[in-house]
Structure formats: structure tokens, C-alpha cells
Length: 98
Image 1 (cartoon, helix red, strand yellow):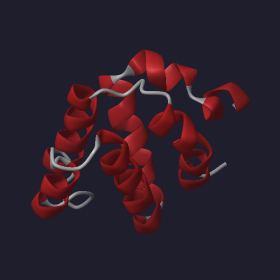
Image 2 (spheres, helix red, strand yellow):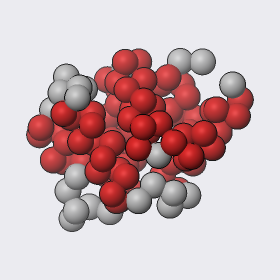
Image 3 (spheres, helix red, strand yellow):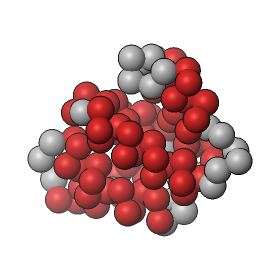
Image 4 (cartoon, one colour):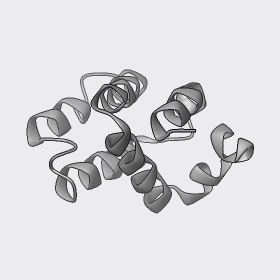
């Protein structure tokens, strides 16, 4: 299963369970932006960190954006999720399938 397929499978779990809080989402966005600026540009990172939009909306938009960008982008999201929220990463529906 590709990372983009896994992300599609995990999207509901990630966006609707309130398991990812504002702080963790910010850490993931900053990691994708600072460590991998080719994955999230400064402009994109600012958009996904905008506190005027709800966390659910920003996270949904981020996940859709990464899926459109391709396999490497989705893979790096999973790496950032594992580093910043290991227990949640281990509980992902796609991890249970693997």
C-alpha cells in the first residue's frame, strides 16, 4: 500500500478523533517546512498554521495537499507524525492492516 493510499485510509481517523492537538499539528507542519522545505514552502506552512481556520479544516487541507503532491510528501508526513506523535502513529488504522 502506497503512502498516499495509507493517508487516504487514515484521513478520517486523523481529522475526526481530536487526537491531534494544535501543538502537535504545528510541530508536524514546522518539521515538514524546515526539514523538507521542498515539501511545504513557507507560504504553505503559514496557510496550514493559520489560527483563524479551525484545526480540523487546516489538518484536512494539509492532508489533501500532501496527497496531491505525491508519494514522497505523504511519506514525510508519516515520518513527522511518528516523530511528534508516536502513540497516535502506532494507533493508525493503516498500521493495524500492516
